[in-house]
Length: 172
Image (cartoon, rainbow, N blue to C red; front, side, top):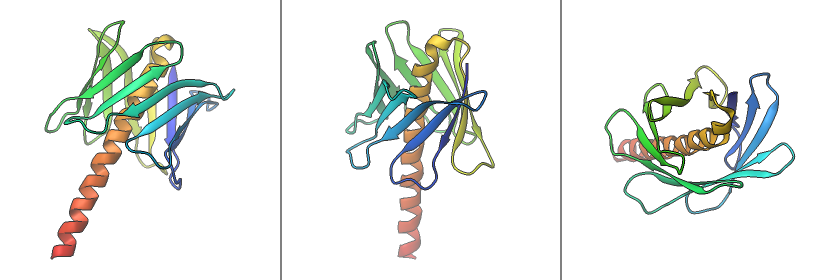
């Protein structure tokens, strides 16, 4: 299954539409406008909740909990690295290792040696756009949630870098 995610540029809250490879919308993702930490709800086009993602705020490394409708809660943990982002998804069916490239925003998700999904950022697009390729449809919602959580981590990193640059410029 191939999914395309496009973040809305001018939105007061995190908002995404997820489309299939034919360009048909299949999921809506919405974040809470005012909350401590990121909280995202994934709904299908019948407005049924299929997943809920929430951030553990007071943690040394990024940590998110993902609740898939009808399933157990899984935990996504970041690892301290310098250039290559690394995450682990602790799931009952086997842990996933997620490794990426910080600069190009490309990620690969693996369960053991099996590739569960790949994520590619689309450059030269209005807003953030990502392509998610998931060979097994059963893993699609979980892979989507992992990608959304990583996007939140990236947004926090970008925000922190912008604040540091602005503070440094203001002092000079």
